[in-house]
Amino acid sequence: MLFNSVPFLLLLLPTLLLYYLPFMQRLQLHVIVVSSFIFYAYNDPALLTLLLVSISINIASSYAIVFGPQQHRKLYATLGVVANLGILIFFKYSPLLGRSFFPEGSSLGQFLVGIPLPVGISFFTFQGISLVVEAYRGKEVQEYESIVVRGLARHALRIAAFKAFFPQLVAGPVVKAHEFLPQVRVKRFREIPWDSAFAALVVGYFLKMVVADNMKDQTFWITFPYFQDMHSLTLVVLLFGYSMQIFADFAGYSLIAIGLAQLFGYLFPENFNFPYISTSFAEFWRRWHISLSTFLREYLYIPLGGNRKGGFHTYKNLMLTMVLGGLWHGAAWSYAVWGFFHGLVLVIERLMKDWGWSTRIRLPKALQMLFIFSSVTLAWLLFKLPDFDHVIAYMKAIFTNTGVAGMQPLILFFVLLFSVPVIAYHLFYLWTRSPRPVMARIKPVIYGIMLFLILVNSGGGASFIYFQF
Image (cartoon, rainbow, N blue to C red):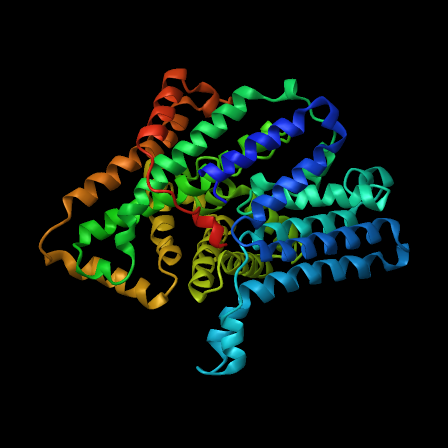
């Protein structure tokens, strides 16, 4: 079920009404859970079984960690993490294993390739891991009780709401247990932060429906084999457009999720902080998909040793974290290459810092931003074309199609037109440099324009790009 669809509106409005009815206050979590199950089961009811299994695993393991025999805490935590990862690996990576390691025609290989990818599995699995790990890491009962509460039925309801909460169920942000569960309490209609919820929803829907959904009709031409006969300039502009599209699509989703959560009384951390103004790759990852990058740092990079064991181990941990982060995005080797690229440039930046070169080589900030944006944009090609042969063909076409007649001026015009809002969004931040959120400074007339364009100039409805992850 898409956020920009009539069925979602027909689910959201009754849910909000029931949620805030005075005599329903004690049943608010029940309302969230039931509506979230309907939301997830809408397109494929069979997948609800998987979500229920995942929820059950995390209810049992987190409760056992805190209230079970203390000498077995580590065992329960290990089993909980392994079970979460097992589900993710089976459903997400079995097709990759089937294609890569079994001969064509193999019955086992065909079985593995045919396993469906449940929408949102990467996100709700990471949430489950955060719950299990945070329950295990707690040192005092007071810490436990904000995450794992006494009374199995009450605990189960809270975890079901945390894992299934529909605003962030299928594409994040990756909300960790300590960010959601301490907020569980009776919510009141008068406490809704209307200004911030309105701002997040309007900007989010604008980025998705006006920018990303219109841009997708242009970046369609990046797909194989259509790009083969296009002019080099068109290919470069299309890649630029896809960079705008993937930001608008995912940042738009995150803002919608944040706004919807605020309508239900929950505050989520920001997931994007103007990433295309970054002057280094390290800064880019502090600004892009913040909830994932912080998860990988806290639950993978630091447990691997982080930067505590010297240069070589730091570089190794960076590279391993980014390669696994790339594979998290998709079951194709091109995603591993994408992660390897980001890991490599992060290692190079770290080397330059460790050896003192970063202080000696100083480029103007505008050139640094242009370099980082161009590099990140080039790497997005691995997202758009998961087949690595097609990526190579596209790059070759950029360098060889200089003499092909026709530059498709309409494509160039519309790519640049729908890129303007994303560029302006980042430039406005650079211009204001305000400690207050940029959206809080946008004038009402601009919100009015965005609402008008949502109504009259939305592109054809399409799934969010990150649904596939």
